[in-house]
Length: 492
Image 1 (tube, rainbow, N blue to C red):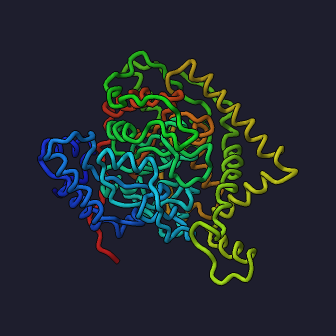
Image 2: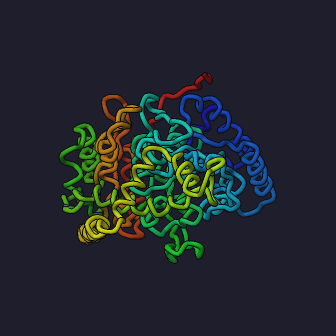
Image 3: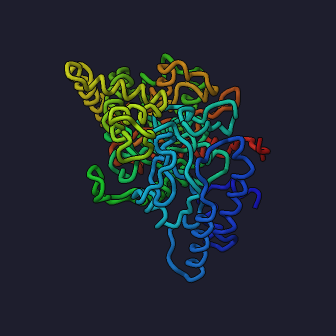
């Protein structure tokens, strides 16, 4: 039982289906692992052990009765704390929602429960998903299991840290500008941002509605394909949800890459990329070529303006979405306000520094006299960025780049320099602006033993091809087999 937390979800599911262990035994093993390492990692904000064990018992009873079950039934899962869960608090890492218990369930989490996955609890994140390090949570810091002095990435840092530390077999994150892929890269995992509209946003607490997408964070590509298959699909409760059938993603894994065209993005492997990261990416290119893929350089000329365009579009949408947290209906309300303005002011003062910064930026960009100069211009640039991707993907089946320009940085290193923090997402943001699927997977380690991430970007609804390429590379390279050396830690 002591090594169950090191296995993939697919391996665990196989043992469950063969009745080599029960769902209850598996959940108990993972809860034991959480107790052993959570004091050091800090991934969870809310643990729900009683609920998890009850769900595991129900899976065991259903399996004993011969009822049909999903391929991941009984496997333990961690959920990012901006997906609402009925009866379980949903904080978004913020003082504003610290004690909020939703009366309804997000479509994604409902589907995962229906598929038999067992949620162990809710995991930490940058407040309202605004951050690249998981240091902006008002409720605690999460640490990278590969080096506890470093960040796990963000905003889905709790999701990535939980899987990397063996505190969950799988996790759900959300990605607005790289918040699944960047922490997956920093923690040596596989993270997928699906095509915009492929996964329902109903019950996902909004940051930037035209960019937000939920997706899977896992140990390997097969687990990722299985989890996305359980999450994806049309939802009539989400007006942006795509009414398209969900393929069997796992069936694409063994197709290989012979004859596929891979585009190496010139702008994302040059200036600003750490030499060790660049070397690992170029080594991955050589592996893909050895497997029969054809690699050529491509250009995304407007990717150089993706970062400023994103931080206008995203902050403008955040300014609008977060206006609802005013003490009237949702979450925290200032005590004994003298009047309505006093209630608004003192309630919203509880936002963290980064959230305040983005609200102010977005409000400014939308203000009369500045709208055309900033927000409208950013939308025009977004159109050009999408056109660049569409053109490149007429020549290539997937685009390839580093996921991040560096490996995980030290806690506190970039907190006082927002621009340096934002640059951690320079390679991931373009796919969000274009609405395209993008995946990160491990492609090596630097001299300090920290994971390096490789990013693949595909055509709209082209997740199958991303999984096809990622699995072929993963099996040839084997970087996904390495685990952080994180043992039990005594509580302080």
